[in-house]
Image (cartoon, rainbow, N blue to C red; front, top):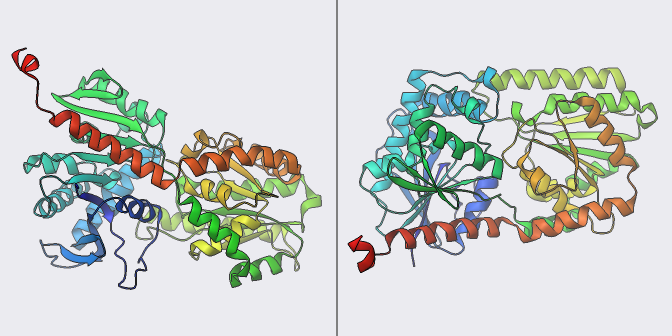
Length: 473
């Protein structure tokens, strides 16, 4: 059986007892992929070292070997905090005004990808299938090809891929387009993402369409397809059903008393639209004064990337917004917005989702947004809540029964909150059932299986020896 090699920016190495250090969406997705393969997971350890070793540290856990490398302070600053998060991330999310390009950061980004590739190449076996994840590693296939690797290499892009006019504002855009064409299979979240990247390759690099999503770029064939990522539906549903015994969930519900709950769960990032959502909730209370004291909004927002100045500024802005709204609308017996920066484990989140009458998922732009799917799956089949969803989230294409909103229009979001709170049970069920059925079919296992099957099929087709007739031609 072929071995699966996963490459990602960060690696979640389980402890010896089996508990993972981190359990984000990528960690869960990769874990599912490894159930069908023995494998290797390679990437950054999360540690910064003055003199990092060129050789990765190897850790064996069950059927998977983890290979991790440290970064130097300069590498971390230029590759991660610099180009990846201050240039690529905002451009990919259509935030041109926040994109900061530095030649030294870009050189560091390419350098770290080269360091990773050299370390990884020593571990790769001829029959391995390589699956690279996310925007930190766009040049990885090109670096591996340069070292002589001919293995099938796939790439999955977890965030949006913008229109050409947006992506091409990045000074390094042509180099990155050429590099990404060295992947055999490129997976994106939605069909519009596929169209954006394909059109850019055709218009900018004169790629030749071959049909079925395949393109010929500089004599090399690549295929671009959408593979919308799913969640661990069975595990999340089970956690939601058992959450009533969780202490945090019990205490939260006791504090709410009879109030209805609105919930938002997002990493602190300007793409998530947290301050804009808070202003929409403020507008809801202003337009519906009878709901003051009867509805509470809990926003759970763990901090992230605090070393990037823009994120520290965002943190201050959100705190100021919370203070102003609570000060203007609240009273000693009721706080309109409960803002929490602590990260909660899945059992707690599942329980809070299940208890919330309205799930607010209103990013300004998102590749997929798994919180939307988690909220749907966590609901009670007898009395489900209502999902209010940004039309600019990738999940909107799989969850059309949600209440769709423009996150830039706080009046529209406020009206959707009112509609959701007053929606009769019959309509809530009518909207929820097709969404949960779709999520159950298209779970994280479905996503990983489809991508890897496509990548293996690509290898079979590409490596099949030519027939005599074909050779004669």
